[in-house]
Image (cartoon, rainbow, N blue to C red):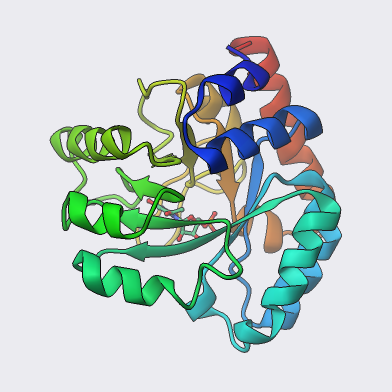
Length: 241
Ligand code: 6AU
């Protein structure tokens, strides 16, 4: 099923918008903009914004992030990408809801863990991507956890799920599958991050490939982002549509 069709069957508004955007722009690439300062995040977003469908941020890991939220929103509008704040909410619903207040004025959607149960996801509203599985070796997200996390997202019509691209996914086509842990030249890092290639990710059911260091730590991030974009989109066309 192509993304135009998936945008018509999805019940979640952010998922519909993202599927439409992916189809129109022909890209499944998300940048994990894990740079040190707000200035650097805004600069790379401006440079490669044309190639991505999602800009993924960690607002609490970037200095002076508060100063660039308006600029990122404008860039998203001009260049056509959505902003996913990877806050990974994990507290009880009431606290998660309060923490969200500082984020939902500029982010289109947020990530959350399912560890605290359905109440947390419910408190965050609809625009939530549930981290159902993690890419770091030794992660505690086993098959049972993943299944239950997916059930919560399905029951609440959340936007979608973060899943490990090394494993095959069987998620309803109404939901967006995001996968980090993608890099074509590295196998991992010193803390246990694991990587697969974009093609493996697409074969295993990923919709949006999230690439961080593979792009921003490259000599020429603009050129690298085009490579990731092209390889993943042609794999989608060849293998899935
Ligand atoms: O490509 P990297 O390794 O430089 O960056 C990967 C990005 C980081 C992580 O916070 C994030 O993806 N991530 C996540 C997400 C998106 O939730 C889950 C996970 O299991 N592994 C992972 O790396 O910004």
